[in-house]
Image (cartoon, rainbow, N blue to C red; front, side):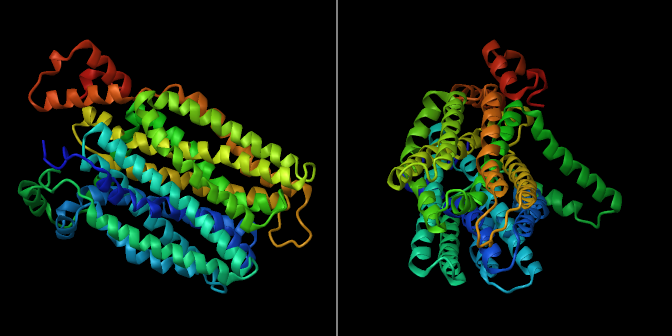
Length: 508
């Protein structure tokens, strides 16, 4: 077993790794919350066009997640990968390139430029996410160590999603919401921070060496021997192998449930992020600065991150999912009640209710975003007992691909739906009743339905600490020459329950 994979993870290591997710978590917060507002107010976009560009760019660039997953897996075959790392090189590359996307925040440019810049922005987030999510599995095999890396990462990511709106609220209040430069100022400062944290994390983390990952001299020699111009038939065969590689991930039962819950919750959260400012502006009749102030209250949810990590270990993901989704549904119900009491409650009482409602929602929203990434480092373990390989970046690439496809389609549907209800972002006389109902349905209704479905599906989730330790123990036994015929009945049952594959078909 390699020395670095068993290295004890301390808090400094976890912070060095986790700081980069200020970009991974804060990046979607910046554009998802404010970009459509900026484009509709200062760049002449209607809501359908703005959401269409955001959604279309996400769909168009989603394939990059698949390509980055494959490239990262094999990057040790190239000199750059062997020098800088197959994961950390791409994280470091995000640092300078993300600064180019500041052109998204310049009014008066042709619409294809906005589209191109947003595509680049999403591609960089995909490249970052695919490689970044694979690092914990390479930095350590220890359950508690991986949990610490994921918990600190999500804590820092959550802080960034709270600090960005807090900073935006201060800027918009100080310089005025009617000026484009107010949005440009906080977008520039935040993007510079993204660049810095990505570079820092790329230098202080570690990963498997080429030899430990199976890319020694023998593998390189095979590659040199195979280096020739491929025929069209060979290219098609290679493409078919790529499709089969990604499709094979759905063979794993634990991953099927995990990806379903992930896509439901994260896609709907993206919709909430994209429409909440509009909901506050036109349903609650408040300002964008007030919406930003509420969004900044997400920092309160970070206090609970260590608790989520503790509960993850002690009550298991299945029970934590139930707590998460029930709490989220209560929060959405309170936000709906707050809307219906606009103009009914005295202003002071209404403000208190809106703050309390958002606090309940943001705590459980944070948990719904935290849980999938607490679970993700253990998915490759379950896959390894079947395939004999650590395919972390394959799972990461597919997860990112599917998320952006779903988010892109949902964004387009959201914009079209709001346009059909008569929503006009710059309409000085306020919105029609149908437009207000449409905003509320997208912002709250879709989420309530989605979380209810997720609650039902989550009862099928079976992975926990005990199961992961049994799988890892069986992998070590088989690696050390143990016979499959000697497996004990309990291990066989756990392996088959988590993988959805007969034990006889595993480790082949």
